[in-house]
Image (cartoon, rainbow, N blue to C red; front, side):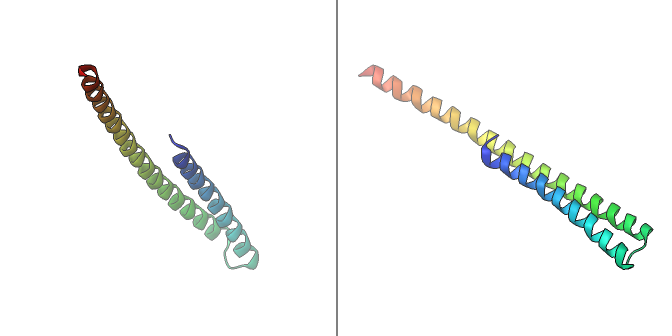
Length: 95
Protein backbone atom coordinates (compact mmCIF):
# COMPACT_ATOMS: atom_id res chain seq x y z
CA UNK A 1 0.00 0.00 0.00
CA UNK A 2 1.46 3.36 -0.90
CA UNK A 3 2.16 6.06 1.71
CA UNK A 4 -0.77 8.26 0.68
CA UNK A 5 -3.31 5.49 1.22
CA UNK A 6 -1.71 4.51 4.52
CA UNK A 7 -1.98 8.11 5.68
CA UNK A 8 -5.58 8.28 4.45
CA UNK A 9 -6.55 5.18 6.42
CA UNK A 10 -4.77 6.44 9.53
CA UNK A 11 -6.50 9.80 9.14
CA UNK A 12 -9.86 8.04 8.99
CA UNK A 13 -9.16 5.98 12.09
CA UNK A 14 -7.95 9.06 13.96
CA UNK A 15 -11.02 11.02 12.91
CA UNK A 16 -13.33 8.31 14.21
CA UNK A 17 -11.52 8.27 17.55
CA UNK A 18 -11.63 12.05 17.86
CA UNK A 19 -15.33 12.03 17.02
CA UNK A 20 -16.01 9.37 19.65
CA UNK A 21 -14.19 11.48 22.23
CA UNK A 22 -16.12 14.58 21.19
CA UNK A 23 -19.50 12.79 21.39
CA UNK A 24 -18.68 11.36 24.80
CA UNK A 25 -17.57 14.77 26.04
CA UNK A 26 -20.68 16.46 24.64
CA UNK A 27 -22.99 13.94 26.29
CA UNK A 28 -21.19 14.35 29.62
CA UNK A 29 -21.58 18.15 29.38
CA UNK A 30 -25.28 17.83 28.53
CA UNK A 31 -25.83 15.48 31.47
CA UNK A 32 -24.09 17.92 33.82
CA UNK A 33 -26.28 20.77 32.57
CA UNK A 34 -29.38 18.64 33.07
CA UNK A 35 -30.27 18.67 29.37
CA UNK A 36 -30.02 14.87 29.26
CA UNK A 37 -30.68 12.22 31.82
CA UNK A 38 -28.49 9.14 32.10
CA UNK A 39 -30.66 6.94 29.84
CA UNK A 40 -30.98 9.59 27.14
CA UNK A 41 -27.23 10.03 27.23
CA UNK A 42 -26.65 6.30 26.81
CA UNK A 43 -29.07 6.17 23.86
CA UNK A 44 -27.41 9.16 22.22
CA UNK A 45 -23.92 7.70 22.63
CA UNK A 46 -25.02 4.29 21.32
CA UNK A 47 -26.64 5.88 18.26
CA UNK A 48 -23.63 8.09 17.59
CA UNK A 49 -21.21 5.15 17.89
CA UNK A 50 -23.42 3.01 15.67
CA UNK A 51 -23.45 5.76 13.04
CA UNK A 52 -19.67 6.18 13.36
CA UNK A 53 -19.13 2.47 12.88
CA UNK A 54 -21.43 2.43 9.86
CA UNK A 55 -19.59 5.37 8.28
CA UNK A 56 -16.20 3.86 9.11
CA UNK A 57 -17.20 0.63 7.35
CA UNK A 58 -18.33 2.59 4.29
CA UNK A 59 -15.03 4.47 4.25
CA UNK A 60 -13.06 1.25 4.63
CA UNK A 61 -14.99 -0.33 1.75
CA UNK A 62 -14.29 2.69 -0.45
CA UNK A 63 -10.59 2.64 0.38
CA UNK A 64 -10.37 -1.09 -0.35
CA UNK A 65 -12.14 -0.60 -3.69
CA UNK A 66 -9.69 2.16 -4.60
CA UNK A 67 -6.78 -0.06 -3.59
CA UNK A 68 -8.09 -2.80 -5.85
CA UNK A 69 -8.38 -0.35 -8.75
CA UNK A 70 -4.85 0.90 -8.16
CA UNK A 71 -3.51 -2.63 -8.00
CA UNK A 72 -5.20 -3.52 -11.30
CA UNK A 73 -3.81 -0.38 -12.94
CA UNK A 74 -0.36 -1.18 -11.61
CA UNK A 75 -0.57 -4.74 -12.96
CA UNK A 76 -1.73 -3.51 -16.37
CA UNK A 77 1.06 -0.95 -16.48
CA UNK A 78 3.58 -3.61 -15.56
CA UNK A 79 2.32 -5.92 -18.32
CA UNK A 80 2.37 -3.08 -20.86
CA UNK A 81 5.89 -2.11 -19.85
CA UNK A 82 7.13 -5.70 -20.16
CA UNK A 83 5.53 -6.05 -23.60
CA UNK A 84 7.04 -2.80 -24.84
CA UNK A 85 10.43 -3.75 -23.41
CA UNK A 86 10.35 -7.12 -25.20
CA UNK A 87 9.38 -5.44 -28.50
CA UNK A 88 12.13 -2.86 -28.15
CA UNK A 89 14.67 -5.53 -27.25
CA UNK A 90 13.59 -7.56 -30.28
CA UNK A 91 14.06 -4.55 -32.57
CA UNK A 92 17.50 -3.87 -31.09
CA UNK A 93 18.52 -7.52 -31.48
CA UNK A 94 17.62 -7.39 -35.18
CA UNK A 95 19.99 -4.46 -35.75
